[in-house]
Image (cartoon, rainbow, N blue to C red; front, side, top):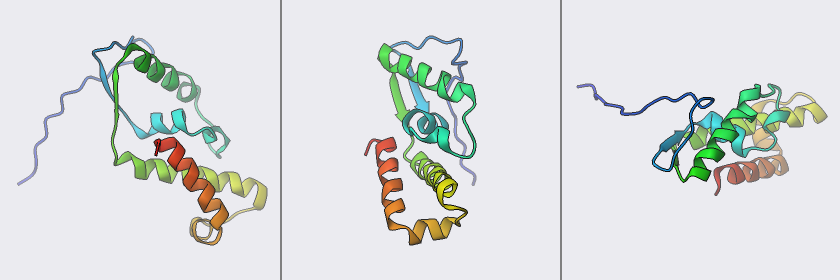
Length: 124
């Protein structure tokens, strides 16, 4: 038998909404990435303006209003993947093309730096 979930949530336009103390938000990986990873703009795909202005602006307004902010632990794997990809792309600009597996397994100093970026972004 298939599981049947009932999701009770509202989708809001963050460019038109003003968050309040009674609000609760589930922040997805994209917001988490652009809000917490300072080198995100250095990756091969630069940010769209709303990612570096609307996301942080609304999230900070929600926190300032006393709203509750939640994130899913499942998003940590996706966040780690995005940061590792960006770190590899930044590395490639200076050092030339490298495969993901080679980057991950043969460059311990890069792996340690990437891991530190993930810890900082995840607040660990």
